[in-house]
Image 1 (cartoon, one colour):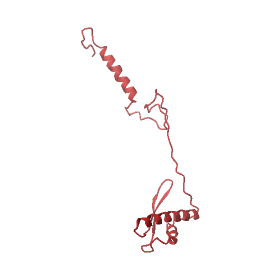
Image 2: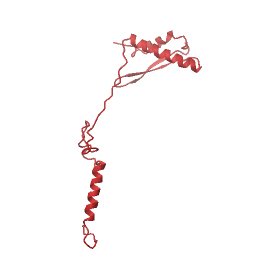
Image 3: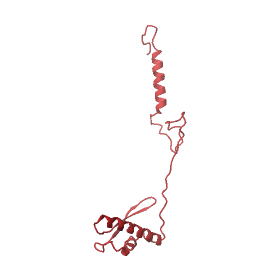
Image 4: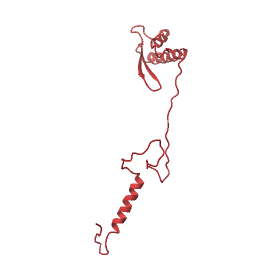
Length: 141
């Protein structure tokens, strides 16, 4: 089944009833993008250069295109978004290997959460401070 989207000329015909859209050069419509869930159609038309006319005619053109799509049985889709929420408790905040975000952590990724890195550095600093003898000499290997 073919619709106005498959025949952009139907959209151009919808502009024929708008008096302020110039006949020459003729309006044009192009299928610009075939995306995952929509088709982008670029429509080009000409009108008088005065700003007030351009804005008014643009509104008329968009309305005519919308009605042409409605008449062809083409509904405007609702935008769909997906939000992933991860567990942000203190024990796993920033630790991708333990968060439930829908993808596994990369085992080759050496990164760690900031709080774990800070804790590791503090422990290493405390351990190095205890590696000295009573005279202050470093006894670590």
